[in-house]
Length: 266
Image 1 (tube, one colour):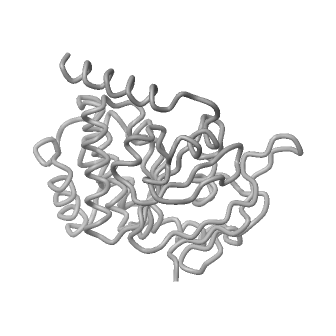
Image 2 (image 1 turned 135 degrees about the horizontal axis):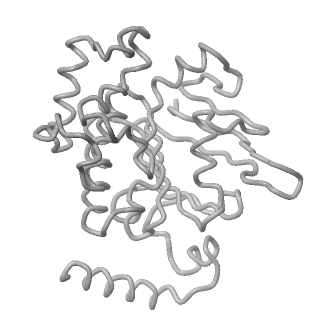
């Protein structure tokens, strides 16, 4: 049984403004799926509909056979504990330390008074240290987040998400603000952690070459509709044109490679 099933999922703001239309996708345990498509294709909306940050107009979101579109209040909060999200803009509390930000991933599991006083159980603290060690930030545990680089902040976001003990990761543009080398490092870290934990993930990613390098299944969205669902090696010029529109893809790829080489030299 798939960990996540989207059945005819739609998100329509109006008759003319349709962010998603009849999206049907299954995500298996341990599977990493890359979402690609032009700006406005519905990638971020799709991720936000899964965890109900946006309420879909129609369709079902079945997470471990439970329809999240039918839940509300405490039932929805309980289900969300197991769906962790990593944001493009990190969504960290910059005046707090790295450790405090990671421990905030436990807020759904501790009483209000503990979260207010930042008095977390010892088990949670030790888990946070282990996660910081895994993402390579153990020595920065007591630093304020606003003292970190963009790549380090994204690693804090990854550790915080893992502190939830999630059964599904939703990742929205994790490399958009990063240089090419750091972007590859972050994608490699996400891929390795998902593999180690058998953790399924959906990654909204704007960089097609990065998607090809680090995910085994790619879904292409165009105007809120799934127009491609397959393996990275199937992304030929005709498929990319279907997703993004007309372009000289061979020339574009060569220019991107040359630009990345220049950045690394600099």
